Length: 154
Image (cartoon, rainbow, N blue to C red):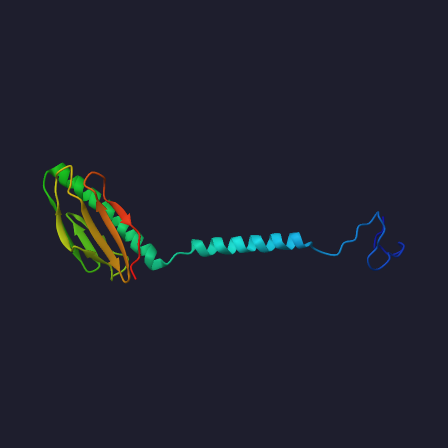
């Protein structure tokens, strides 16, 4: 075994072609392609994980509104009294529940209404809008309130 310790025989410089020592020159093309592919996949994963904060805020506001509408409907059914809701700039009030939007420019249409204590509601939709994006929250009357679409308008 050759070593670089002082006093050992000098090792020949440059590539050797003896069968006992393979020729080591660097990475193979396959190894380089594998590394480049892994880097591309990692970059794509990171870019897909990063979301627009305005879109994220609108989605969270729509989810919060759906949960509050379900809670207000449950309150109306429990008490037997309709629960009014009123939207204003930056917030919405559903009976005793007040939601504050994450973005002050968020608007809700229609702006006011009443949740009936009846177990089955008529089909009902609310549009949550922020800048150029909208989310529709609603119910078909049987199912709970939920986000019905996630389509951004131009």
